[in-house]
Length: 356
Ligand SMILES: Cc1cc2nc3c(=O)[nH]c(=O)nc-3n(C[C@H](O)[C@H](O)[C@H](O)COP(=O)(O)OP(=O)(O)OC[C@H]3O[C@@H](n4cnc5c(N)ncnc54)[C@H](O)[C@@H]3O)c2cc1C
Image (cartoon, rainbow, N blue to C red; front, side, top):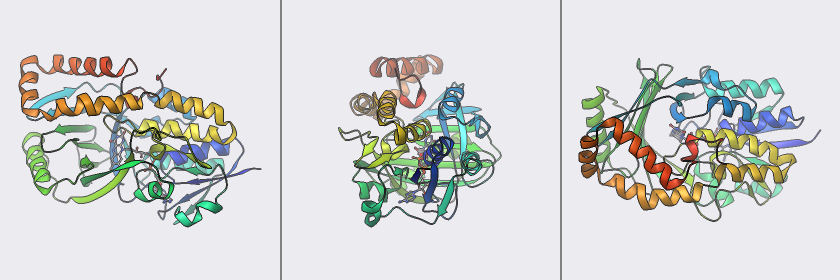
């Protein structure tokens, strides 16, 4: 029986490992944390994503629906303007080592399929030469693996907070001139996860205080404990996204399967886990699939730089326009604008399986 090594027991690594084991490979997953549940820098957390749940489950060969809960409400704040986002197709999911998480579901499937796990094992630069060709790299958003493999990336910084809540199903997004990305919070299974990130620059304490004041006033929600974290994501460059890097198969966010507009990473990670598994036995088919899922990314990234960022940075002007239009019309115009600019396949995170 052929052996395959996977580095990273996050969502993409687990999907890859499960599919490889089902295909008859002897699979070992090496994970730097002491147990499953993903990176302890970022998890436990709750994430929110648009997702075609049925199509994604079918594609990756795992019914992931028990771990995804439909979003109850998502409030998009542009400055003071509140735009309730229609929630169909929007889901929350928990990332942690608790039984309610997506990690628990995928880990159980892997164990059932006979995947071996080695915890506390890190991918190190000095090991790269001795690793077998076809080793799958699924190390998520942690910086070290990008450096070892020289993956083009940009650093992001964030304040994050988490804790118990009784507001399961709620979420909000906050755009403000003090930050070029957006703050967001999602709540599921009795926990909340609140993140205020920015790319390429530090997030000041003043920005955090402004966000805290806002969510307390508008959402009646206060978070006392915040920690400062940093990570990386791939950048759009001719060298990214990339399924193969030297002798390695790239998998999940580190492959570049990551929505370049709003940072949705879940659908890309799940789908690319399956693609990475395919790549072990059929490189050409895997490459064609990978290109199908990521071929709009450069265009989306350009849209973000040239249109999205300049427009959304004018928060005060936007507030006025949106107030004049009203929430419903504002939302449909926004979606129409994105579709027209990016193409009918829209944002990769929104329609991972329709990128034809
Ligand atoms: C704080 C945060 C919030 C997010 N929120 C959302 C959201 O709301 N919606 C959304 O769609 N996406 C979100 N994302 C993005 C999404 O979580 C990622 O794109 C997705 O988890 C990527 O899956 P992955 O398998 O590539 O990595 P992960 O699921 O992160 O797994 C990577 C695994 O590799 C391990 N690892 C790392 N380095 C090494 C190493 N050197 N050696 C061995 N193991 C290693 C880690 O410990 C981890 O277990 C968020 C990401 C972060 C960090």
